Image (cartoon, rainbow, N blue to C red; front, side, top):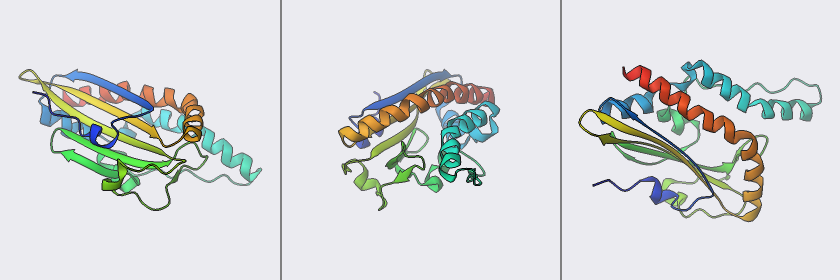
Length: 196
């Protein structure tokens, strides 16, 4: 019997989602640990996509400063699922070796993405409904598939808190969505290579 999704406890209804899954020929625990500890900044294509994704921010900074020196984008030393808490995300829940869910409340459509002001705790995340925000949750899940294989599922959900946020996020997603969708298969391919 399949276990219920932790993700459904935090964002059961949502406005946007990206789901990517793949069968990998490795045991569940191996897949899970490899995925949550993989430093995606070590994948050249991912570094390129992240830089391309940040291009609108750099252009906005340059225009706002009118020729003054644009702010440098600071890169974390590593970028792993396990690092999300250190990057401002909230650990919402975990089933060890099977599923890990992080969330964040913010305004990703702003030139400098901003949070909700007061930090939103894990227990407040599902009920947060202050107008003007996006609730974003990232789920990493691995289910067994036969005796020696696993199904790896990576899902992102976005719930917007009002009509204005939906409109703003739609414009943002037109530009950023393609980068986010491209990253998933690249990461899975790298994971598959790492496990074999």
